[in-house]
Length: 456
Image 1: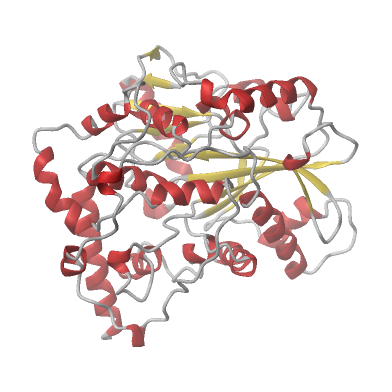
Image 2 (image 1 turned 45 degrees about the vertical axis):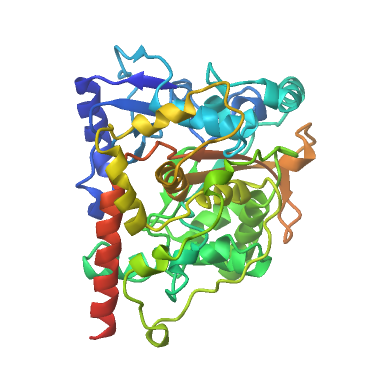
């Protein structure tokens, strides 16, 4: 859903969201402009939960508002019953859903309504390519039956950049891990994260589960757990992880299972969801060949000065293919649209001097286009969107027989308990051209922070 929000609603949302933001993000705010409204992915969609409904009536309204000029703000159930977003007028398809529409049509982003909920109901989406998928969805909507007797737990993961471009292979660590040194130096974090995105995207089950466990130990802004739509575990959570996992994974047991066993079960459930193909075969239509060749020599020349490999533990660059069409595979596919580093892209921006921040989206509007014809700057911006997206996986225990398709059921290997799960993707607002300069400055700051810490 795309809408224009008025000033009074902006102030209301900012006031409601402030207590939910971590201290280091209190400077963030929502700016006036267009927004993208998402379903509440922390709860199962209606077709997976028969009446009595899991959510109270007011949660039928959109739960997430994402400003095209600001960061995503997750509302959950924070809007009081007597408040609603008044005077919101629908507008024609614009920046946010044009971007999503084109990517969905080209199989860049999830195109299954089961996965994306309302995001796949855009009025201008070409349904022809998804005909079989929609047919399966309609049949499921009519037949699915899950007794609603259990709470819904949702895991939100912000996976970040899952690969290293060729231009940055002279660095010992990935972008996320290098950025940890900058955050540590400016006080945004108190300790370095144990998580590395390269592990999560590695395709190696052991490393992927290792990455999930690392997110539990050092969640920062990359992992949150919700119960029935309410945040119960994060970096600043007052509840212990063991307490949350026991509620989820062994609610009826009187025994206090070891935390390590619960973490193993959690890792297995999340790993299964992240590597499951919920869509079926998809035609990844080729991009224009004009820019397909990989990095030219000027990339290495424009890269910042190398960081000593001897003083930093390198990230593991090895990988195996991810299961085709799983959520991580799709996100990584878009991330790899980037061909050039930030410095090179910044030099290319001279051709965009007369353009608005979001004019590049115009190229995605043509409904007659059979392939994405993107220049390097546009590819960079699309890849950046995929680097900042969030994956939300909702789980609910199944106590009795259900008619949910097998691919939407995961089994806890330790207990044999079955869960129905659903995946949503948010934080997909397109990036403005102005973000390139911001990234260039950030990269320079990262280099300085790393060098400073290593010479202490």
